[in-house]
Image (cartoon, rainbow over all chains, first blue to last red; front, side, top):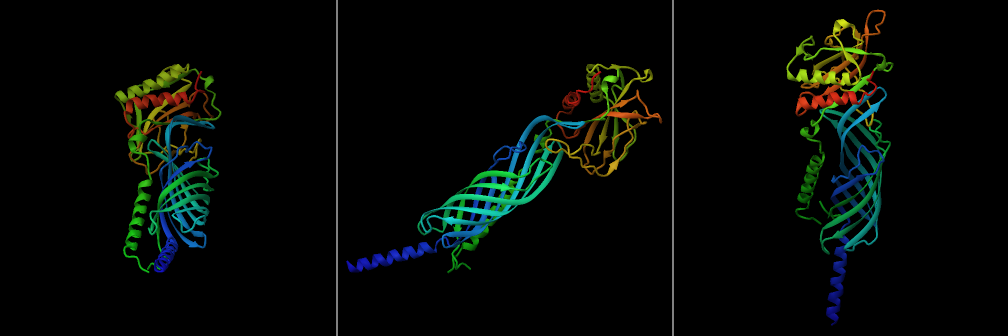
Length: 206
Length: 215
């Protein structure tokens, strides 16, 4: 009985040590769905054409790291007439915004080393948005460059106790100052969610 | 501590993301874009269209200019007939009477096609954002002695624009020149599908968005 107890204790400690080795660092990749929030009707539709890649390093109950995000927004506008001073244009338009974001992130983990690890965090960085409007064979374009502020909350779920892979789900709000005077954006707010995977990279990897 | 295969997995993950980056950058297809024509009109700010009663218009022919050979030439045939007939229909509907050139018309209506000239102004949302560059002045079909707008000369080849102009023949300046009162640009004539019917609709649109053209 004593031997069994010692064995059980040793096994438990070893499992615990292994668990603590998991998710010291990780890289992640996810599909990103975004919905623009501006009152500007240039872009109104949500878009599933987006993704995120990033990495995190764990320090105590925090992860720090960086994300690169990409999203395409698009809306098709039916034929309408635009009036301006002594001019007018009638056309249908296909409106696009291609958004590239880079943020430095900090996240607080509520249940470190558990199978389910909820977290909340904040990303701060830069955002470049290329605005395009296609009409017949013609195009108008503008580029906005600005800051990006992204509060987010999510959960990491390991696929097994010793799995190096976890699935992740994140909801986020983006506030970008990548403005466009041509298309009437003083800022570009959006919200969205991400679904993806995280791959553990222990500290000792070479 | 080493993890065999970890680098490989990371590499493939990154390759997948690069592929995702490329595939996510969607653009509209050409066929989606050319289902209808763009119609752009500009009006001389002091024009008073109610002060005119008659107009002249050459029926069944359209002027034609290419960037390589900007000399007067004309095209005829069913397309020219349909387009000029539709212009006439809209002018008549606005209350003007068509007369011959030698009957001192108040207005002269000119219609011509510019091939490979960039005359369309860039659009902002929801107004204009002009990007003039490389100004080029072609000769204009029919009526040469008036002040016109500059046309853009860009490298956007294999395009064509129908231009309709209304010129003031009633109030000439001291040099005997007339003023251009109104211009419509309709494009693109080469790439848009079902060119005849789309052009007819576009001609109607050009007058519909210029409701100030009425006697």
